[in-house]
Length: 107
Length: 399
Ligand code: FES
Image (cartoon, rainbow over the protein chains, first blue to last red):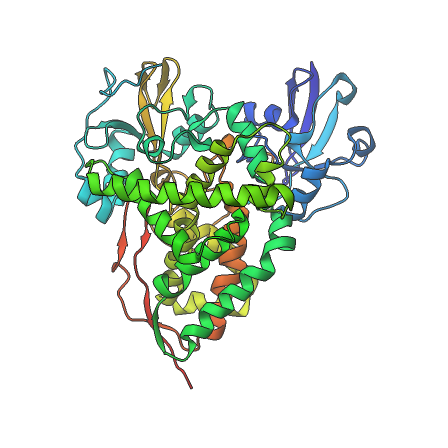
C-alpha cells in the first residue's frame, strides 16, 4: 500500500492509502478528497485534477508528459513549476509518503 | 445485453408531456429532483436521473452505465460512433480524433482563422443596425469553424449547418417521420462523400485537422469510422457553441449592469461561459444503458435498464447550486455537468470556450455599439434534449 497526503487550500491534510499502480487522481476521487474534480475521468483532457507536488517530491515524481504539459497551461489555478495533473501520476512504492497540494480552484 | 424498454420494478412512473418539456423542462425537473430523482417517463422511454450527485455517480462508472444504448436514434442516424461506444473502442477513436481540439492546438492552429471569420460575418451586418444574431452570426460562425477544424475545405458553412440540422432532426425523430429520415440520410451521404475526398487529400498532405489526425492515427481507424464520427461531430458541433453564444448574449443583454462589468473586466467572459453552460445547458441529457444490476437513487435497476442522465437538471440542483435558477456570474465556482464527465467529456469543450468566450462575445459586444434586444427573454428559447435560442433579434447604432 502507498500512502499519499493531500493538503487542501485551508491547510488541512487528508491521508489516503492506495494500491501501487493506481493513479493519484483515482486515489483522491475514491476517497472523496475535495478539490480534485477530474471531469474527464483521467484522460488528460479537462485540467480539473491539477495538483502542486510538494517541493521535496517533485524530482521523484518527475516532469509532466507532453500531453499533460499542454493541458497545464490551461488550469484554473496558476501553473507553477511543481504543477502536475494527478491523473497522470502513477503511484508506486517509491512514492510512498507523497505530499501534494490541492489548488484553490479547478474550474 | 438487450435493452429493457419498460420501467424497472419499483421505479416511480411519471408522465411528462414532450411539448411541455420542449417549452420549459425546468419545472418538471425540479419536481422530479424533489419527489422522484429516478423516474420512468413513458413518453421518453427511459428512466430520468435528475440529481447532481447521482449523475456524477453514473458518469464515474462507465463500465456499469454503458454508452452502448441499443436502438438509439443516434445510431440509426449516423451508424456506430464514439459517443455510443465504450472503452477500449471509444478510447481508440477518441485519441485519434482529439489532438486538433486540444487547447494549445486551438490557440496555435485555429484561433486566427476563427477571428477572421467572425470579423467577416460582422462586416456583413454591421451597417444594418439590426440582425438575428443566431442566423446571421452564431450559426454560420460555428459551422465555418467546425468545417475548418474537421478539415472539410470542400464544404461550405451553409452545408455544415444544413447537415447538422438534418441529422439533429433525425436524432430526435421519436415520431418516426419518414421525411425526417430521408433528409437525415441525404445529409449523411453528402458527409460521407466529403469525408472520403478529404481523407484522400490529407493522406498525402496532413493539415492538422480532425480528419487528418484520424487518417494518420497510430491505432487503425477505417474510413467508415472516420465518416461516422465526423457525422456525430457535425451533428453536435454546430448547435453547442451557437446555443451557448445565444443564451449567454441574451442573458447579458437583459442584465446591463453585469454586461458593464464584463466589458470593463474581460477576464469575466470565462465566468459568463461556464455560468451560461450551467444555467441553460446546450445538451440537456444523454442516454446510458446498464450492463449489470445496479441501485441508484434508491431504486434497484436490472441490467439492460435505460437511463437518461439529465445534466440540465443536475446543473439546477439546489443542493449544489444556491438559487440555481438564477444566472449569476459571481456564484462560487463549482463544477457543472454541461460537458458531461468521464471518458466522454466533451471533445469540443476547448474549441467552444475559445470560440465563444474569447472571441464571439467580445467581438459582438465590442463592435456593435449600443446593442439592444428586441425580444423578451422567453422568446425563441426551446428544447430539452438540446436547448437554445432559435433567434436572437437585436438592434444597434450604426453611425
Ligand atoms: S482528470 Fe481530466 S485531466 Fe486529469
